Length: 338
Image (cartoon, rainbow, N blue to C red; front, side):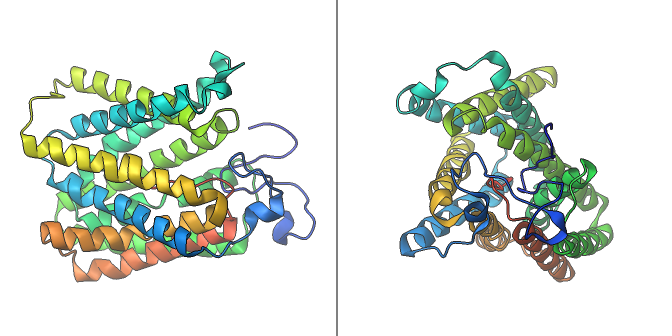
């Protein structure tokens, strides 16, 4: 981070500002060619936007329950969904957005590579948590990504609004409740909670690096590099750990395909599609609906009911993260971590 004021993916910048509480001011995000005021604005979604957002939420909500049904190694799942995501976006990059590659230098890809490394760490930590703790707890904890990006901003010198701190407090209380309940359930559930939180922290690094990368790259170029790096790192990890990447039952291949289409392509694509019309705050808040969505799909597909005492914790986490997102008014999409 450099320049006269430090910036972060939440859209806040330190230094004196006019007309903003706490001396904060916004800067235009790379995805939204608009003034700071319009980038921060909340836009009422139309019927088409509501429909697309609903489909996107369904797509990302299916990710965790379907993942919990996979019997193949989690490294294999992470490899194939990222490799398939990169392959699916490569034609878009080489045709419709080919002109954006002109003048790019290797150093312009550095942030995309870093994002891919963080994404690989995210999947390596979060995916195993789904077989160790409940889907509801895992998804709630992994969606705390905006909490970690806010704390990263504060460490870098950005002054945060009071509402962000209240959101952090609510989310922290929710995490304590979930972890406290899982302590009584089993040591494995507690370890799963820890892995989900680690996945959220790594997703924070992925979001921050990705926001920087997209200042220079088209979304397709960023995604192809990021997903490819993630797939290569996961493949190497699987090779070192002697984990097979193929040779699974047909059921697992169908589940991997379903997860790739629903979360990696379908959900993310629709969220980015409506980003320009409804604004990043609405999209980021819509992503939080993944938590109750995943809970419902886990109930239907897995017959999994989280401990009742953990549900208030899940609600507090979602409310806290929502408050952080709303108060920080991000200028870049807070992507789903699943």
